[in-house]
Amino acid sequence: MLLTQKAIVEAARGLVYSVSYWLDRANSTTDDEERERYSDLVELLTPICKGYSTEMAYQSIIQAVQVHGGYGYCEEYGVSVLLRDAKIGTIYEGTTGIQAMDLLGRKVAMRKGRLFQNFVGLLSEFVEKNSAHAVLEKHFKLLGEAKDQLVATTMTLGTKGMGGDIHYPLQYATPYLFMFGHVACSYFILDQALLAYEKLQALYADKGVEDDAGKRKLVEEHGDAKFYFNKIETAKFFVSNILPDVYGIAKSAESDDKSPMDIVL
Image (cartoon, rainbow, N blue to C red):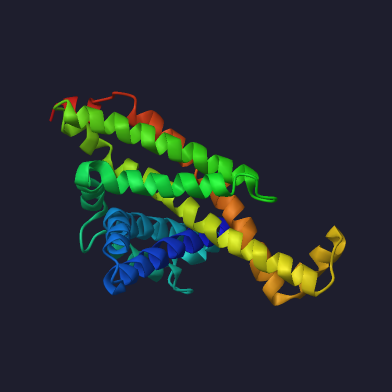
């Protein structure tokens, strides 16, 4: 539970901080091509920042309540207050459902799909560049597979919509937002892990540590080494345990189940 919370927070921060940085770059650059590239990323990922990060934050605090047991439900430690306070984030300035409809119904299709295609290209380049990483090779492969699933599900829902069935894509818009968020946040948290790995290797070299036992001892005793090591492990956890939710969402979205529309009121 605690590592789930840590992974959610670090991945969501990576998402929000990166999109904020891209917005600054778009607003400050004098290069038209660069401005367009960053603006496209901001446009596409804004619903993810709002919808996904607030929903996952709420889920994180639910875990905190559970960790505290009965005290989490009472107000002695303030966790229940955090839970109520966090819920508003999923509601105001456009509920999660609205953000999801904006993502699937507008942003993904904007400029003939260019925004989505460019982001997928960014992910593909990232995965390919790091596919043989010494420690994270498996996790980059998992991201690549999830990215391909995101593309396939996007095509499925898009084809339904273009075929005249506007209700079916909307039915799965919110799960699709979570799918997109899982994939995007795996990119951001793995990017953090890459930098942490470089910093950790530099620390090992600086301290003259080469064997596994010495490295473990340094991680346990040195604050920076512990921070970098835990960054890597947290990224592994997110990609191995949270990202796979993509496939359950995909199975539902591709099921052709229209029971919500067929139910009699």
